[in-house]
Amino acid sequence: MAWDTERTRRLLLEAAVLEFAERGPDGARVNAIATRAGINKERIYQYFGDKRGLFEAVLTDQLEQLAAASPLTADTAGDLAEYAGHVFDFHRTHPKFLRLMYWEGLQPQEGRLPAESARASHYADKVAALAAAQQAGTLPDEVAPGYLLYAVAALAAWWFAAPQVVRMILGPDTDDPDALRAALVSLVRRLEVRD
Image (cartoon, rainbow, N blue to C red; front, side):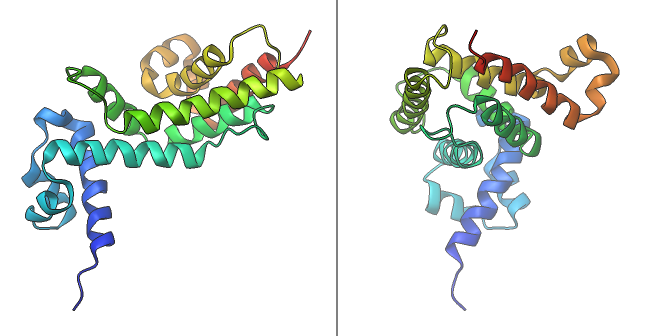
């Protein structure tokens, strides 16, 4: 029987998301990841090189999923509120993603981040799309496009980054994620309005 390499790789990535989100790259154990995946741990070394390579692959995979779930192009940049809604939806359905990003941020920065060049290019494309929308007049230009992208991404993520703070500020309103999404979209929609 032929070995399903892609399925094995996917199972390892999914198990690694859970292990790394819980314990970070230093605390995660290769044995635990392999056990969660139901795969021999030697496959981790075969496909990813080592635990650090697996962590980098997990981050890259998760970031690619976020990019696919929340496209922002020159054609869609004028609807920044809908982009914020897509980012919110991604965090809602991928609750471990922000923990992975925190763990990455807590690591000593020895050289470049995983796929840093590709990630920076991806963000540059989004900033360029916002700049084009501002030049076309579909978005106001009072806020530089890079700051605008960062602010919207932060707004969309904060609900999940610090739910305890959201709960203390908003109280029972936090029990309805659809209402939170609607509030976020409404707030960002105000950033789209030209005076």
